[in-house]
Image 1 (cartoon, each protein chain N blue to C red):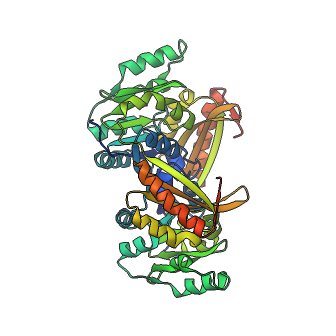
Image 2: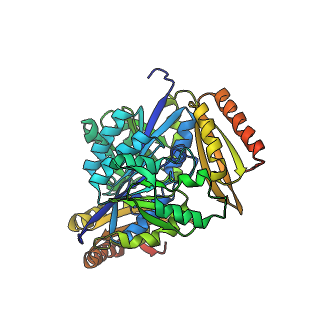
Image 3: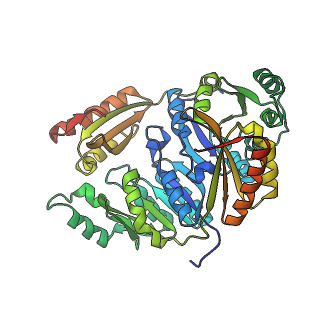
Length: 249
Length: 249
């Protein structure tokens, strides 16, 4: 892919345990921060159950609408791990033993330990490109613009380094945060004016209650640092006029 | 709505701060656990940006496909809070001052404090039904099968009690968890057999690494307790045969 100014992605979280509330997803935040740092903006996140038809349909929508799709979950050894087979069906390719993955896991486990359950983890879409796993052996994989990662947060994190060179990002998305000892309603109209005058900067306003402190964080995001700086000056101007204290957050 | 056996919902998280990774969503888990307890299963979660067209389109898909939709975020006083106006457009109704909400906030604030920013929070879709907010005054609202809640987790939690009577759930979704000192690959094939013999029970397998302990939690979910119990007996049978230790988690 040639370098584009704006590159976007979707995250597809696959797993009944997130939908039941049993497990708190943290992979979205990990992936989004990492993607932002390499110039990829997350457009959308979907959480769906371990149901083949739903995975196939959702993936086929997301991979057409986004430059990249990152899936998490469902690539382990048990019956509810159906991501690799579903991705194969979404792409209309064979679901087969990946020879390189087989060799990696054969070497990873002690003699006799590479059992039937573990061998399931080397079944992947035809021509998948491995994403190496320095934590627990079993690799993820990429096919087309789709990258399939595990659901366990610590393992997922350890695999991102090896994935970086395969993602072509756009301009990095820069951000600046200013935190104020105030409430949103005190600054709402001033902030609206600043947003109206700075259409290219995405300005977000987020109340916080943290460690006994109450306030509002204003986040400015853009690919252009000088536009952010200009926006920040305008905010600091009304902050000074209103005698609002700037605080650490 | 008459009582149905299966009732489902979608959760729509509205907010750039989740997509950028700045804020870790916890409302999905809060809502999912609460919904399960009143017999509503979460089918899907989507996280989308503060963009009117995307909110309108996504909401119109989700409200047709699900018995209920719960939105979080975007109902505060600032320029990036566009949920109420977007929901009005999705339903094709007027976006107007809600008289009851106006009275509530007028009484909530001290004289002179009910300023322009705060008055934005009483603009809602025509005929919206309020969801009272015991924490910070500003109510959420429901329209049709859609319920709009704030993004701040503590405030959202405090509003669920008042919402309970407006949701008609189906059979409660029961679950049983058994945690084992093993790895997934050791039990994968046995567990597949149990799943094949218990199609009505959703069996999930989740590895954990927690407080120095490593193991697998098996979660059985169904509306039918005796089906769960039967499934559990079959799991305990192979666990005993394999001499796997059952542990607390």
